[in-house]
Length: 166
Image (cartoon, rainbow, N blue to C red; front, side, top):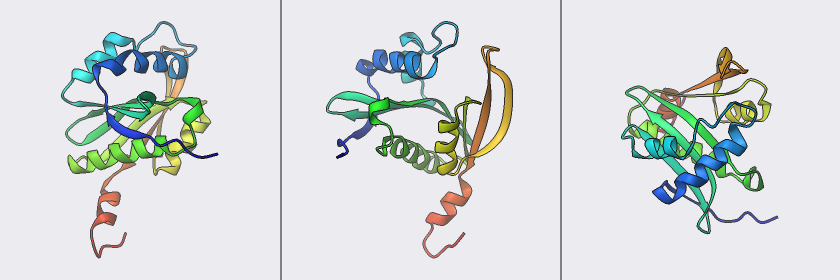
């Protein structure tokens, strides 16, 4: 099956509702309430230290990532690709884009949490060089535990330098 071309871009106000709905339907299923509602997504979109990235296919949102950038750490707060577009390289392209941005900003590591029973997500991040860092009991509203994963970026940065082997 041919892969539909996509483009990565920074989110705009018109993306807020779709991102919030994707969060509710794809990430927050089984939790109480709706924590990444449109108002919170809009706040993230306006925050200087936050990047909201969208994968766009013919003007429609296929995936998104919300990442907070600090002095030394980038944290992937929210990430989803619609099921119809999974396993087509969109998620990998978004994470690669964010990691390159983090490296440009001089950040030395990237973190993410996911439900402890989300084995597909854990495998996805492991493939991208993230390693298990911590098990956090009751992380999701005292309902579900989480796994925190981390990827150190210094090794990645060193491997990009000409003539350098790692």
